[in-house]
Image (cartoon, rainbow, N blue to C red; front, side, top):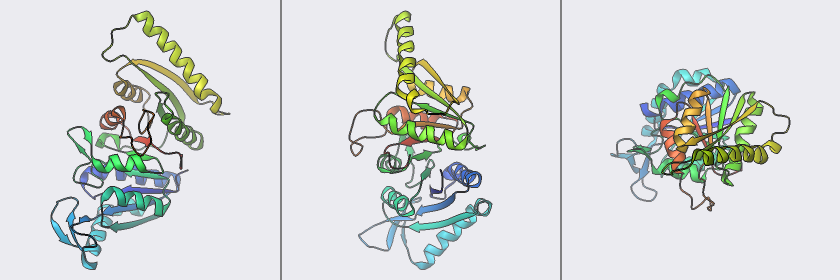
Length: 297
């Protein structure tokens, strides 16, 4: 399922968790890792002078500088590169999100893995996703895995996947990825819906009725698509969606959370990353995969 993983990294310590997950996945599943680094953004079109992605300083990119960057990446990830059968380092200049997407297409990547600072000075500022992750997650033709917290980077292989749905059309692609992953990698799958009662005053009987209805809807929506896959269960909880998603992932010792990139019925080109997904990425104790488009699920 995972034949080629694109690890988008600045080489900064904040991306080490993502690197650990990417290389561990490659080692377990025999995938190739492409360590991809955008050295800087050109100050002018076709200029060799770039603003360094990590420092913001102006740097002239010549063969000597490229070789230095590649050597730094090779040194930083030396042990991990040696632990997998296939790995290579690719560097370039340009707008980080655009180059990551271009590289994913050129390499025919099955998965993009990003950390807290993968393509600009900070992929997260004050609890909100930065522009690089926003743009990559929206436009990527393959799923995008984000490892934000260092504690989310432990990778013991797949054992339990939590798929969180809001029953939107966008969730269909995320479900396909979650089911295919669970089936091919031999792990359990939890189908989860959080009944959003934040800011609402509801009668408890009304809440119970809605929970029963949501459980039935999960069975009706996804049950017929399961085929012969039996290792799944269904959970519906009430509360603030992102809180409940993080809680059930922790309770199930989930190795992966899968959600749609956005929930509203929007053209994918116009949709921003959903607020629930934002908060799950920031708080989850395991990697989080967002799925926007159906090409590689």
